[in-house]
Length: 423
Image (cartoon, rainbow, N blue to C red; front, side, top):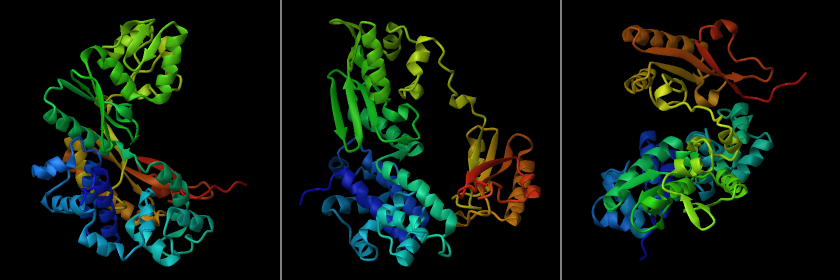
């Protein structure tokens, strides 16, 4: 029997995770399956080789139990428990997991109460106002579904930035281990540009023989020292920025190619990105600005902005806790922030109208504030918790707490929960 490729194994493991979550299994176990699936999707080494070497547990997120599942999926293309789970819910229901903010319990209720078995049926139900009347779902969820369906359809092959970071860091280590002859390995693609959603998992390595290798969802470009900068520029993108940069070069008598900047047949610059931009008399354009907007014009005028760096950040605002739909307590979130060297942490759980996400009642707000005060006293001024809220903006434009409650917050993040009424 032919072995299942890593991308398919990752997809099967993701399905396994979603189906177990519909049964109410431990959510932490579900998240572990999903992390492992992401890691498999970005493997930089053949899965066969890792299994043969007994090295599956070296992959981020894969322990002994998940390794057993992965081996079975790889060998047979399925798993006994997965087959049993498939008997409970139609395959199309798995599409609903792509909708941000749609939890397994809500997906199951949509399936059982409304017969929703696909994204198309979910959209039809929302547009027909069939979700709003159902207890436990409601108008806010219906609105969010309509808002997030486009994200679900466009982000099927994309990873959030933090997930992509973990996978790419592991890929760099794996590539260096597998190819000790590579003296340099750099992350490229849309991750290097700081995109929130990452679709292009790309690495550029310094070797002797130029080549491009695609393994599962990872793209590895190998180039030599002379052309490293040009290869990094090309692999970083974006497509719009590169197209505009090529046009800019052509207008000035140059030709920008994947292997460097030319004037006629003479190679002018290719070893570093800096020398390519400099040869075009442009201010160096940081990867985060390369989106094909006005960055080339601003670089020509030497007016590019100074970017905010990690070292410029002193704290974190707007995150959730177990008080609403987060997975960690206020104290755990604050401690994690403090241990990373930040000076403050701003909690902003959902407000009371967000029933679908465990929004905080006024009493629960008071309880959270008392806990924040207790922790702030313990920190003794060395670290501070800021009291915030993600407040729903109601149909009449007001926020969903009275003024005397709103005044107790240090900051508010407004979110439109319903269409505004225009009078």
